[in-house]
Amino acid sequence: MSNIVAIVGRPNVGKSTLFNRIIEQKKAIMDNVSGVTRDRHYGYGDWTGKYFTVIDTGGYVVGSEDIFEEAIREQVQIAMDEATVVVFVVDCITGLTGLDEDFANVLRRSKKPVVLVANKADTTDKMHAAAEFYALGLGDPYPISAENGNNTGDLMDAIVSHFEDEGVEDPEAGIPRVAILGRPNVGKSSFLNAILGRERSIVTDIAGTTRDAIHTRYSLYGNDFIITDTAGMRRKARVNDNIEFYSTLRSMRALDECDVAIIILDAERGLEAQDMNIIGMAHRAKKGIVLMINKWDLIEKDSKTAPAWEKELRQRLAPIDYAPIVFTSVVDKLRIFKVVEKVKEVYEERRRRIATSQLNDVILPEIEAYPPPAINGKYVKIKYLTQLPTPSPTFVLFCNYPQYIKESYERFLENKFRAHFGFEGVPLTMFFRKK
Ligand code: GDP
Ligand code: GDP
Image (cartoon, rainbow, N blue to C red; front, side, top):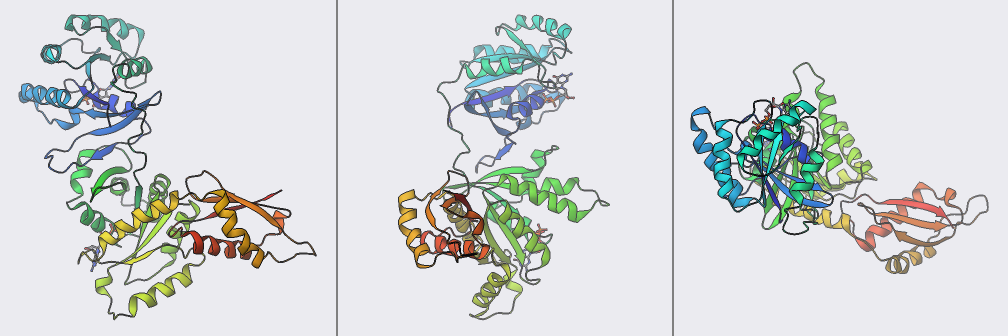
């Protein structure tokens, strides 16, 4: 992606508050670039359709009072290296400080555009106080309140006016968002650590905020994923809280944001009611599903065990029997990357669009060969069908008596769709409309 906004400034001026305001709904993305020893505080923002990356350099540099100089040097260095626009934050409540001047001295020599932000201008009085920052020689200060949002729109206009290109592409578009779900103890954290190839605690530590879920951008063999990690939510739940409630809430939130859910089951316990609930939730939310039967190392087995399990699972899960099933052992690193591959496949299947002509050429003959049964002497005639441009595959079938289509006939159609077009791991939705 092209445009990068770096936020610099001495501690406590409100850099992280501004960072959070800029990324707003777009939750922070922690970018774990291998080879980078320090973790960066990255997020994505957009303003009037222009997408950009924001770096909170303050979150990046840990400085104590006596290493300010070093901290400034590092912050500014990051900004110089990476930014399209440097946002330099000062504080209207404390006013101009020597440290602000040190920052300004370095920034004035830089070739990057600098936007001077006089933060904590919560009231008109404070806005007037912003005038003293003209002394920094960095142009007009933008008086804003990161906390209540005052004037942040003008600031955003100023920031994007420095962008080199349009930056219209959503950097997250086309990157599968994945949620890892399952009852406690099935191996969710272990699995995440295994695919991330390091201890996840690093990620949760930097987050260190009140945010509920952490999105980790993760790259494997050139495939990018954004994985929602719900560990932070667990930490918030207190001992006395209803664990089941929190775990359901967690799953729902993670589901809400994902394209594909990896639902982990514990092989030793088999398919239980709680697992069915989670799978049902993913199905209703119309998300892609990959079932991972973990702790396979603990099962006594021969070559027939997995197929037999798979068959039984599908029978019990019907009609939600379309998900790929992978038998894994996280401790033995057995097939964990197979799960990742399946996620990618299911993601693609969910995005699949079938041209209307192909859909009618293939499905109408199936309907003709096995039409919906007549009800009260009325013959249901399905005339044509089309796929809607929705995130998960949805079809509209036009017919004379939509109210007479039975669920069993929908099942029949769904099987035909899957037989012809695949859609493995993807819930299909059908609407019958009068025509
Ligand atoms: P950072 O160290 O520069 O990242 O600063 P923080 O974002 O952590 O903010 C430092 C303190 O200033 C916190 O207590 C914030 O709540 C407060 N703060 C941030 N923005 C504003 C603002 O616009 N107005 C006021 N009054 N306080 C703010
Ligand atoms: P979570 O609560 O779903 O995140 O589960 P954890 O990842 O914390 O794992 C719970 C326990 O199961 C830990 O003791 C793990 O070591 C263990 N575990 C995870 N995966 C496997 C596996 O594939 N085989 C075996 N034998 N144990 C596993």
